[in-house]
Length: 324
Image (cartoon, rainbow, N blue to C red; front, side, top):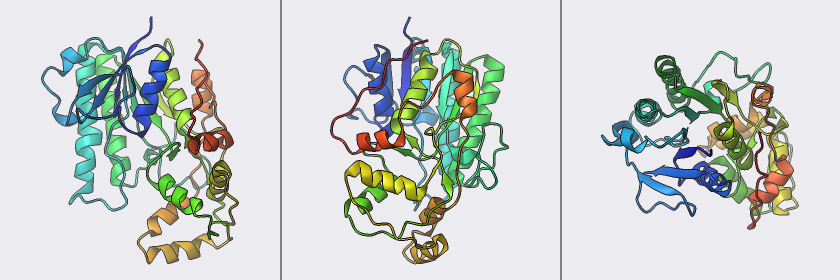
């Protein structure tokens, strides 16, 4: 029997793609959104919940028919955070809100809770070797800390209730209309100007939207996925320079990248308030996903080259159906 899936953040970049993919495979899907006018894929039921930390009193009743929750909503990392206390703001949504939803789900008898966390829980750079799911967490930003605290709270809830919890830690997700740094790079590459980004050679992992969606669908459909932490990334470790070249190829651009040293770039970009963004592109952040592959019998279905073509194509391509 196909499960009934609740996807939080259903109108967001990841949530919309996941809802559409689940509906395409014949599953019953409800999306939790903040606004009644939020755009959702056809066939997705709507649950309006403006604030997660203060869910309505009937939340348990609304969750009664749900088998699996995919919690993709959250307060995202922002370069210039307007909050007076960023950590408190992140905790309110990413920690307290997550736990409020998970408690209601456990009380309602939901069998599986899939939490979209962040590789930032592992740390901001993989200095000696790629990150693994077994690494000691070293979150060094308010955003990453709020995600780590949510993971710990979920683990405690699992121990006391028996609801299965799976925590997924992705790096930067790219795809059609992706926000953040991908959107910024898209605008720069589209201009066709020479860019001083040809020497960003630290090992980096990225993950295509299709690959994250495929993993989450696999977790939803799997008869009994082991609880725990899962890292997700594309099948190959690359560099920021190679990633930008792949973007250009996906856009059909002939791009010239000048090999300006990363330390020079960071100093220059600091003058215009972009130093932290440049630092993140220049440090190593590689993921080892072999534990995810072996525990779930899953492999990323898209290569970066194919995913980039999809990201800049007006015609989406369907993912293959899942079999177990």
